[in-house]
Length: 283
Image 1 (cartoon, rainbow, N blue to C red):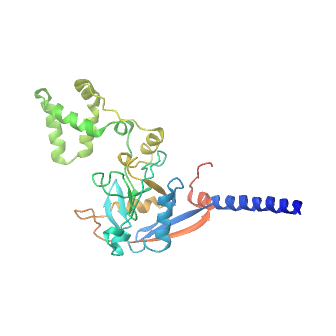
Image 2: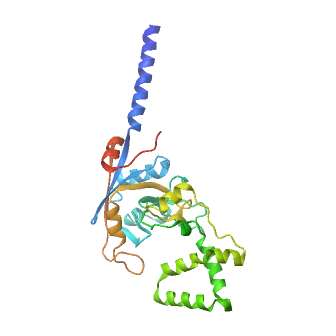
């Protein structure tokens, strides 16, 4: 009897290990279907509350017929306002605790949770439903590792000096033409001069993974560590580009609505890797 019980225990343990192994070999594939095409995404295990919440909303069909209502080219597309669609009272608009992770950044295609501003949301809690997908832009090393706000402030002071008439005229010319990228380049080209003149450090520390991502695929680095990134588009970035380039009104609302239908499917990680090219981190 003791031998039989031992066999049962060992067999049960093996079954539990096998079941756990099967669970880790599968993941949820998210399909965001729009009138401009489909985007396929995965959600990160490192942000369990956000992953579970998104899957619950999508599986129950609550995201269906919501829209991407805020579109800013070279920045992001935002949508999924379930609570407004359903007419819920604001007291029922729940939030989620932030789940920041330095390895999960705002590179192009990242899915992150929208939230209210710091002034009324100092804990940076996420909206219980709204999300955005990053388009962003590609940065060079200099612009990525420069504190742009400090640079702008120093450059503005520097322009006021009587000795900088030529530089001031150049700035005014670019401003009148609306050539803001050229203005940014002009400021960056004077970074070393400004640091020496005002005895400032205009540098900005960035992690290796940030530099690698933002100088290649691009993104929105200034949002890192302040908004929770919980997923990534692994196929359909062309759809993201098409949507982000749509004509919008003054409030960033697209002229033509962009509705979505969100589907969730549990599939093998091998299939996701093979068909969508996403490589899971080694466990």
